[in-house]
Image (cartoon, rainbow, N blue to C red; front, side):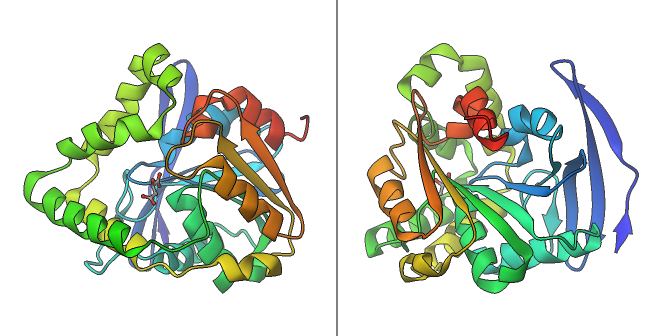
Length: 279
Ligand code: MLT
């Protein structure tokens, strides 16, 4: 394990510090800020930790917020050319927490693909989990049609690059209101998608297609769970997430009005209130 020189920057007046860390086969890039109970923020596909920008600073008043780029995304690199499975991400995150000296169980908060990783992490490293926050995600596996579409998309991105993905994904990620009212912020997300290496996009598409159905495991999740979904989420609809919450013995369900699939990003004030325990 080796730490690199931290990079300090400023976005919209907010200072951030990116740490780098080489640990096993991953060169990590992450933000690690604040003190208190560890809160791990894991981004969705095909994004990076900057989707949590509206959470990192405010939530660091109460938590040690750790927001990494998953291996292959943002500025984190991995050598593997295998599918980037949810189990691979989960095990790498367990290594990362060890390297950061986090021995206390974490609050694992994941959005969409980050939620698939959260469930894999719970299955493989249960003693490391204090609480789950599952945003705009699902426990079920892909059906055959979705698997086939993912494989076709993986092949296309490897030959054509990521531009078509920006066009196909943006309308699905956000509520119509967000697309109309925050074009600049939406463009920031678009450029993250555009800049994600095609190999990582293909690796994660194939990894998501391989994930098991974890629905039957939900009743065994005995830690507190917060289930959050945007009212207009078209990818992981509220009804499905409500059923998911009902299957977990200690889960609470929260619908964020006016949000789509990127609920914490689209409605940060509501989401942060929930995380600060004031809702
Ligand atoms: C995500 O937001 O991470 C993706 O929509 C997940 C998926 O493709 O299943």
